[in-house]
Image (cartoon, rainbow, N blue to C red; front, side, top):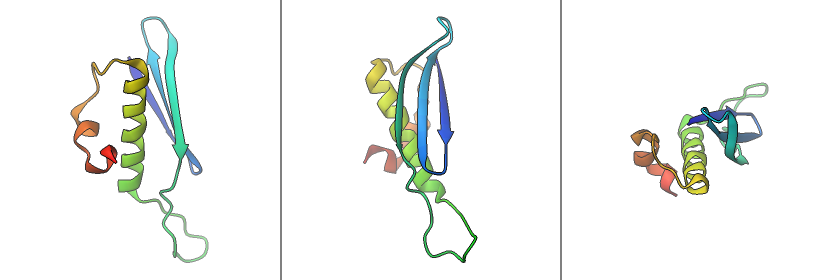
Length: 84
């Protein structure tokens, strides 16, 4: 199994691939709300904590959809904001 993440400017997507069968098993997507407000004009930054929490939430969604937590690393399971 392989998880692909796309951290776009408007949305964040995740796909779980079965590398042996060469197909996508499931996918998940959420809005990217990591933009930092109040920056000078022309500046665009994103909060890394918010990005990681969103990515971990999507990984958790993939695990729920697939019913298979094998191979999911401990980083997402222990990230505090991922469990919200």
